[in-house]
Image (cartoon, rainbow, N blue to C red; front, side):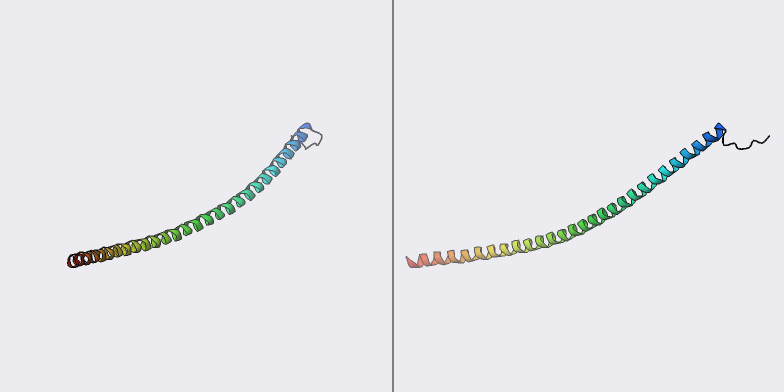
Length: 108
């Protein structure tokens, strides 16, 4: 009761057509997979470049912060120096005022 494969049998042609469609589908899936893998590789490279750029930007931010801190210290030193200068000028102005007052009394 075994049936022999007969190439003229319509079922054989249907099976052959189905196999061809499966092969074509498999080929298309493989092609799509290659395209997706290539896209994934490009995306990974882009993400790596973005990550490197972010790291460089963070490092630049740290250097900027350090420079700002140094600048703030210098400004504070200048402000302290200005305060001392103002105190000395005030003291000198007091001395000059006292001299003027004394000379003004002695001169009249």
